[in-house]
Amino acid sequence: MGSLYTNSLRIIKEGQSDTGAYIASPNFPTYHYCWLRDGSFIAHAMDTAGEFASSEAFFQWVGRTILKYGAKVENVRYHLEVGRPIGKDDVLHTRYTLDGNEVTVDNAWGNFQIDGYGTWLWALAEHVRLSGNTALLEELCEPIQITLRYLELVWKLPNYDCWEEHPEYLHPYSLATAFAGFDSIASLVRTGQMEAGPVVVEKLAGQVKDFILKYAMHDGRLVKHVWPAQAREFPKPITESGVDSSLIGIAVPYNVLSPDDPLMQATMQAIEVNLHRQAGGVYRYQADVYYGGGEWLLLTAWLGWYYALTGKIEQAESLRAWIESQADEDGCLAEQVIDHTLAPKYVEHWQNKWGPVAKPLLWSHAMYIILVNAIQENTSK
Image 1: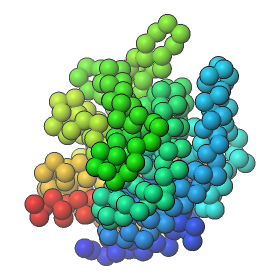
Image 2: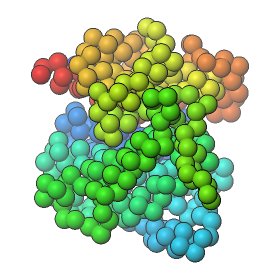
Image 3: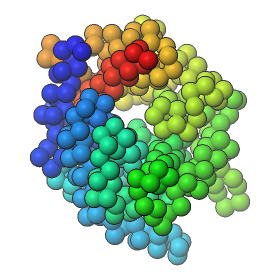
């Protein structure tokens, strides 16, 4: 366990509010909030490190926040039943203040992102598996059921992807998080750790998986986006978007497909060829222009996590070493490294808009912790 690992734990603890929320980045004003997506992975990292008190505080914060805004779910149901459009603030938001309040000052922000809701259920189930704390499931029973009802209503609706883009489409990554949410709770019910609720989770998990296999593949691999069903048309894969590194999540950790599934292997091969810079890091997708489209440290760790779980320890170690080489003198990891960008002319635009790249990014540190522990666990097998 090197100093970056220890430092990563420290940065996450310092970035956790007394409320339990994790700040996305303390030095980047646009990220002074807690996203369920980032927070769930950060909590999982803390679980892999045995820091159960930290992750438990986060899950309790999510529970309180969902209870506060849970009435929106029945409102969404009503809108769908009467055919009324759903407004940007009708949905459960993707990010909250550290006190668990909605952020409504930025009218341009895409609030409707479902992936954080599936991911927190997955991370909570992992927390119970690793910590043995089944009492937390009882404590969070109501927010769990609210989340399941919400995902049941919205999983087929177009919404923003995990990069907060393309609200006109469905996204295999986001669908995978919904699958993992339903599947994780189904597993807890099957093993008797949780009472069954009104949402038929096992059936829904199957429906989401079937949807992905039917509409999210082209040419033997998964696609980045899916065109939603129109009046008389079925959904269909968007083929021109290319591959996206978030698709690693279909196998690791959401387990829609196993890593040795041919569809997953072809998808991973496309990610390795198109998005992994040789001897470097991993890009989000080819057309990325955010800060010029740099190499994302969290995605590099994610690919390493995949390698560790599939026995490719040497490749995982190589990615770990590269991430470690990107830490600054204070042991901080940024969101992305912009030495080898895909669209250099856009770097200045974003620096002028929001300042330097976010650093430290707690999600980057979290994925590094997950990678280190995955390597250790799978080397000792």
